[in-house]
Image (tube, rainbow over all chains, first blue to last red; front, top):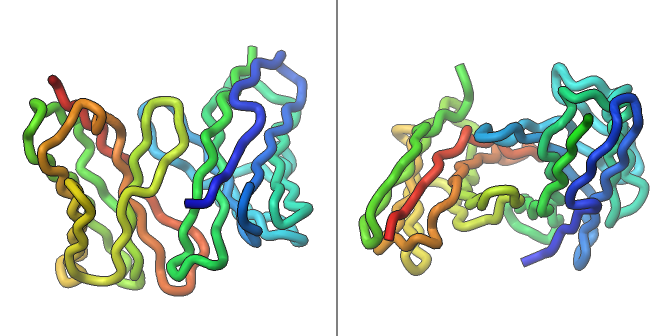
Length: 117
Length: 111
């Protein structure tokens, strides 16, 4: 199957700083990428849908000015958590949709664990 | 009410047992049904997908969809300790770009 990578895999930062997470589709071009967050023992919560070359579509309740998403190329989307606070500590996972898939299959990255001190 | 409801678990079974994981949904527009497995601190990986009603088998795994009842299941035969993970059901409508996920069921298979 297709491979999606994320970087970094984990990050610790101080409160008030910004953190950028990268999501890359390694062997296919992804016109659409998704960003999720997941708290311990909870399911995936979709934060936003990112389409290459256009503004991301944020889910209700997600602050677009706090979680900046950029999808500048067909293989790269970035999520920047601005002015991070301890409550932003979570597991952030991206996925990329393979347009060649007949059923909109999403391939997930390995996730990034963010801890804000 | 959530669009997708998944049996919450956790589920603990002995090695070799048959496991049944289930989800119900309310949106009749869902056409594609997936099961993902997620190990602790990892991203989900796709296990099975089915289109519309019916069964699909892949090794020890069988996915079952009953659209009339809006009910899907994943069966694991001869369960192994390596099957211990959280299992997420997910669904997509024909024209929607995003998947709707269940909350996940954590399975532990004890040797």
